[in-house]
Length: 130
Image: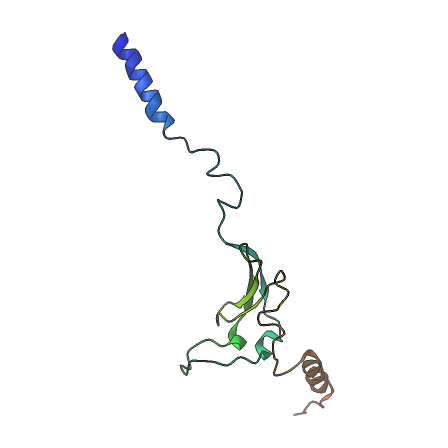
């Protein structure tokens, strides 16, 4: 009887070690990573018009015009918000808490008004007949 009771106590102690503390799975800054995802968005037409210098000469390397999506994340330590292209990896960042913009405003090779004018000219262009 004593051996059985001792065995049950020992088993209980061993099994109690399997339980994780309640704070391990709790939501909070200590259990989360540094970067919080805000979202994934389609790369707009102006994303491809950013004036970006490329440091690589490899023609197979993705350029910002190749990006299909922009991934936006928040750095929970600094407050910095980053927008990064999914293929090029090029990021535009800003930190609203520092009062200064890291890379904004970006330089564009074409502006929205230029793209709208090109679209309008394409609509007005007479269609060739066969």
